[in-house]
Image 1 (cartoon, rainbow, N blue to C red):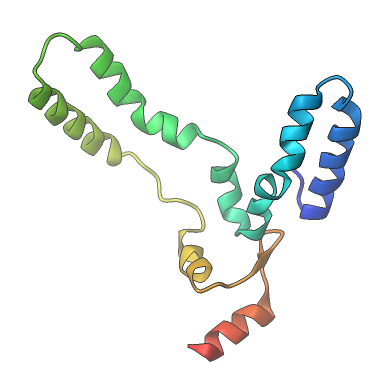
Image 2: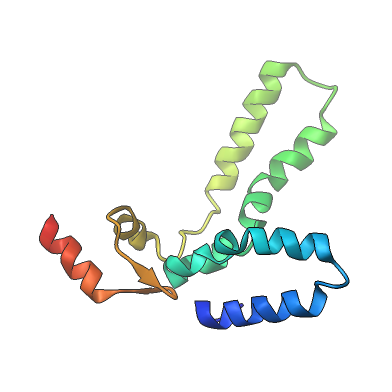
Length: 130
């Protein structure tokens, strides 16, 4: 939950130093995947909340999971697929728009973000190139 990559790396190192003796396999795994674990600092800060949790994925399919478990032996494959489609369509109506959705286009154009903040000089170069 650090605000910057530098603070996150400091906390990461502290965690490794503190728990390496007790949990060597876990800390080695984390050390191996360090760059991937901290990669979201190169994305817009508005996206961080979605990257730190799997809840949007889990809650999206919760309605479908609950209904299909109860109706397992009651319907054919085709009616089950139709029910899943309808439940997904109904659930979609309650989804909220993602924060920072407008910054996805900037990411595609290779605009650089550092600690969640767009870098102006990179943004100017990208605009001039297009």
